[in-house]
Length: 142
Image 1 (tube, rainbow, N blue to C red):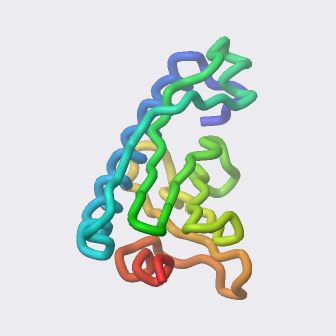
Image 2: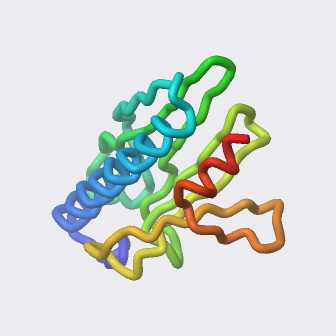
Image 3: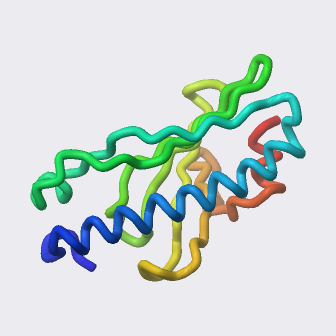
């Protein structure tokens, strides 16, 4: 679906799908967190999301879930940034402890409705596309 030609109903459906994908991702991250950071807590909270394509359809903002993990001396945030991304279903920012520890997470599912294929990108590395899974999440926490 092209955001330029999408109807308001299609945009809303895509936003609902994105929120559902994010909640599924956060459930997976919560499993990893319980194992890797047992003294932490996870908080999922909705924040208003807005993009030019939403405003063009008369949608000022839309509640999208964000994820924060807090542990003694640690803070990890997953911040959804863009739904419409060329070559991906969406783009998130993952910050681990410090602003300079930022990574990008993208959903490479080929099309809406397919199972998510989350990958994280470490733009400082030469091979920056990596699967976003438990083992790599553990490495990011070190």
